[in-house]
Image 1: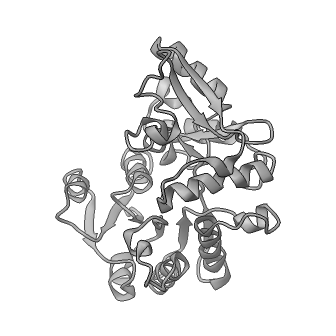
Image 2: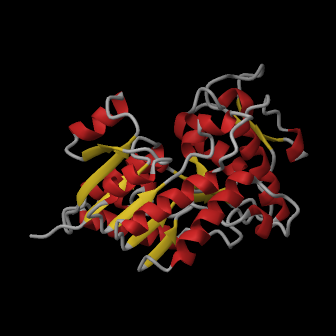
Image 3: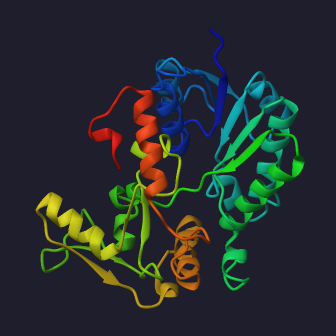
Amino acid sequence: MFSKLITVFGTTGLQGSSVLASLAANSQKPFTLRGITRNPSSAAAKKIADSGIHAVKADGWDKQSLISAFHGSWAVFANTNSDDAIFENPDEKRTEVDLGKIIVDAAAEAGVEIFVYSGFNSASTITGGKIPVAAFDDKSAVWQYAKSTGKFKIVVAVSPGWYIENSLGQDLAPILGGFPFVLAEDGTLVFRAPKWGGKEDVPFISIKDDYGDIPWPVSDIKSFDQMAQAFENAAGKKARFEEIPNWRDLEVYGIRGLETIKYMWGICQESGGRYFGDETEAITAAELKKLAAATRGDTGKSARL
């Protein structure tokens, strides 16, 4: 039986690996899967290859290597890294838009029909120009460029919300009050951040467990207060949310990636909590999760968000 080839650019990242895992588990419409990596000898790349997924070497800045990697693909999922070390170089003139356009053009020349990009609506558009943010604006520009080519049957942007994994990272925890690793002086685990804005309906997403299945921005909608309470109920450890009144006061220690996160709060507060410029809802995500579970023959707990 002919199976369609789906190629993932960004194979070893959280998003790409989640997409591959979900597609690999699909027993109703089995796909042939290919993962692109710059370093096939890395531990993450070897793990992908050991799972039976064909891993190929290509570089996002090398169009010809991408055309070869995309050859024969029916669909491509691509995620570009706004925090790639190359963009930390003050002498680097190339941008994420430049990288995205190379990927788009290579996919088009390879005859790809479905192009799925992990992109955002433009922060400048969402906030009426008040809060431009390069990571948001550049990803939006890549998505719009892919649509403008007219070379694909379908172009889709799939934008993840607030990573649940953000609250499980040892590196980010100290920036946000220590939750859930470091106790405050009163013995409570504190999540310290600006409020989200609007109705405080934060679109939480589990990248590992849900993003590849949905893909949609939200696994669950909760305020940061509700998140802390849910953690307390589940873990039996006291937790609370503490508001930073002005989002501009969030300390990021000059780290470019954290600066983007800080400005994310600015976007949300300016837009009334609309991270993507649209109303946050979880109904679509729940239906997609059920469909994904059905492809695995799973109707149990993991079929629900």
